Image (cartoon, rainbow, N blue to C red):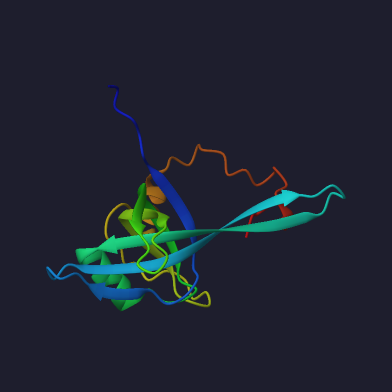
Amino acid sequence: MAKGVNKVFLLGNVGKDPEIRSTAGGTMVASFSLATADRQKDAQGNWTDKSEWHNLVAFNRTAEIIRDYVKKGTQLYIEGKIQTRSWDDKDSGQKKYRTEILVNEMTLLGKPGGGGSSGESTGGYSKSNTASYDQRTPSSQPDYADVGITDDDIPF
């Protein structure tokens, strides 16, 4: 059987304060929701935003960082994978399903209510790492200043 790919990249804001718990074996678990936004033009040509909500789960050290630094409104960049789990409901006996994103890497991009970058990261590139990369970019690269991008082109 051929190997598949299960990779998710999300950039969004935390919907409510994360729930932190520990398993019977002592593993820390953080559960939270993340909203991503997509901007589209409607039939009249007006821009409309559509939010998509994602359920995320993180374990161990990532869960500790979420506990200490992530609150409602925090902007995050997430890399992970999709997982659907199922269980039998104790009350009704029906089979229940939940699709979640298992967080492999997370970068904190901003504090709740704006406020810039916290510089914390569990992997990947933090904002400060990206800035140092940008400084190495040759000056011969175009800066796209003449393209005419407006606020309507930015999806947030």
